[in-house]
Amino acid sequence: MPTTNEPQPAFRLLLTCDRPAFAAGHDTTLRVLARIQAPEAPVDASKRQPLHLALVLDRSGSMSGVPLQEAKRCARHMLDGLAPGDRAAIFAFDDEVLRVAPLTPASEKLTLASALAMIESGGSTNLHGGWRAGADELAAKAAADGIHRVILLSDGCANAGETDLEAIAGQCKAFGKHGISTSTYGLGNDFNEGLMLAMASAGRGNAYYGQTAADLGEPFAAEFALLTSLCARGLFLKVHAPASVGVKLRNDYECVQGETMAWHLPDLAFASEAWALFELTFPLNAPGDDANPLPITISVQAATIDSTPLFLMGTVPDLSVIVRSQGETRAVDPLIAQRALELDAADALVAVRAAIETDDWKKAKRLVAAAAKRFARHPWASTIIATMQRLISERDKRLAVKEAAFSARRMQNRLASPHEPPSFCMAEEADLPVFLQRKSEQGKSRRDH
Image (cartoon, helix red, strand yellow):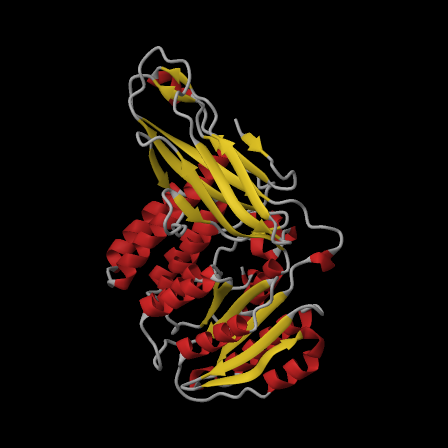
């Protein structure tokens, strides 16, 4: 059963075990689901944090025509949605970096829109230079409050300036520690998904892609809706457990440097939950004990919308001791079972992607066929696996590796609805904010599904 601790009543930390007991005389592995739930959005939406955005657009030769026009349209949509207290800067890059507009108050939208319209296509792809210029602009003119984020869009690989993935991701991480986060958008089949995903992960932002220019609108809308709904940032979760207890995090969250058993979680939006699934392995339990003698707590720290420190702590429920045969007949918590299947599906996608990248199509086909059987009863995972089966049958290597990579990331670190039922229909999610909706194909708009 879940336990709740609410130092600040608006936020909740729920801890749920998949089974309520130890197996006497045996090592026992239990799954614990930690859910950090945010309150509903306030009636007065004007109280949201100011946004300070650096829009960085690829204008290399491959972006010429429809791709660049669609990128500018999406950027214009973001500019149109800014409130008076927000600011935006615009940069464009090919082999050189152009500051199209410095960090400008949103009250001067006409100036920003006019500058955006002047961007034309050019030559090579100095992706790092464009991103770094946007990050430097935000850092130099950082405000005391609000969300500072670089929005980077590119359809190609970094082939000018700094091109090393680890070096670029390291810089994203350094800026992220100082409150300058990064979200990335890849377009088409030729961008480097490994780089774009690494930048977003290290930069504490989000990663999206569109198969075509027309598919960019939905991910831009998702990012803007998320940014204008954030209520807690800088979340990190820490497990406090005896040394004898093994702790394994199933989600692919980044570890907190300098901390033991602590991980960064996604920023939290109103009416959503961030979550983490753990596997706790306990040592042999002596027969006759009637409860778990090893206290395990989970704590969460963050900053709320007004920069107030937030601290939540919960204790894993005491567990009774039963014989192993009894434990095997007890039902597993259904929500934990569904979330575990998502993470298992993400692991399967990672394996499929590895096979495709080595052109081992026979292995990829075998792996995805096994996954189709295993996840047939999970509505979301099954649709993603079906997409992968189609791409593998078409031998579409570039698109297949991108779908596998972005789908796995989405399954591993998504925000969820606090009211998400264990059994669901994806069509029923149409009324949720777009950043909470699940898609069967990450690079396509839901309208095409």
